[in-house]
Length: 142
Image (cartoon, rainbow, N blue to C red; front, top):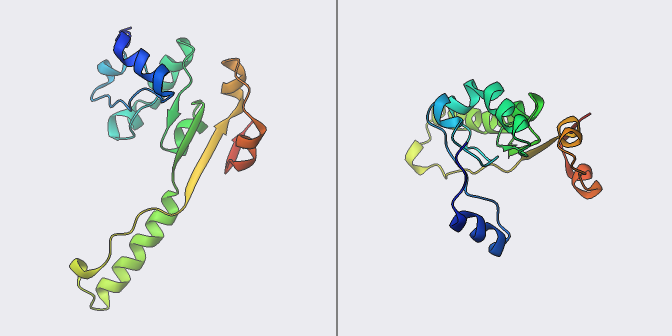
């Protein structure tokens, strides 16, 4: 497994920020990643079991943008509520069908987000999830 450069590691320590979000373009490049934070797209979604397995076997906490990953064994997920996004899209369709011009409709950003924490995975990694985080979670998987 490829290791982060010392620049990446020292920058993360000095700024107390997480490593940059990575995007794996193929299942093979997933094996080369050593950060536990991945962009959600078709490749990561369709290979989520591989990705979660790699994170677990390397004792890496994993953070994802879709709740399915936490439900499948990832440590946690934080992302927009997809059902709320679809409801917003439906209201746009309704406005357009009633004659609104799409170019004149404002861009809407997500307003509802979901935090899902997998305590089983946290225990397997030897992590203690702060009570304050558990209270703010949309869903906690025992």
